[in-house]
Length: 149
Image (cartoon, rainbow, N blue to C red):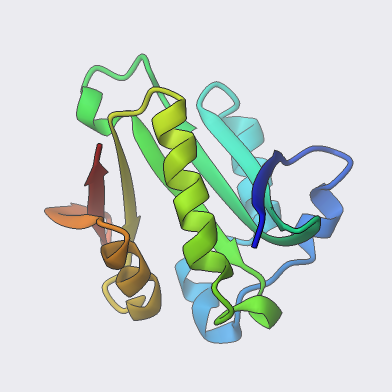
């Protein structure tokens, strides 16, 4: 399984917008088009990527890199992460998460933070298995997890 992150661009965004999570997961994540628009509004910190496996687009992820933020423990966020519903349960998410973690490490991050609802049990299990730990903090109605390097 060869996972790659490729920048989301005008050329590949429509294919990415067509990717969807399962209906019961829609409450946990914005659509990829909404995320793209958020990236345009936050161009100074947002880094949107399509996730490819062996040349096929399988998902989407977006990071926040805010090196200017005063708290060094709060500069690097995994804002979005999804695998298309038709491809879930096949190991793409776990494999992509390892590539995402490597990207953060390779680009100078000292940790990764993310937030999700406590009811998002499948995602939480994957994050915790990868080493993310609960911080005890809340981001609106979402719990915050963190992976230190």
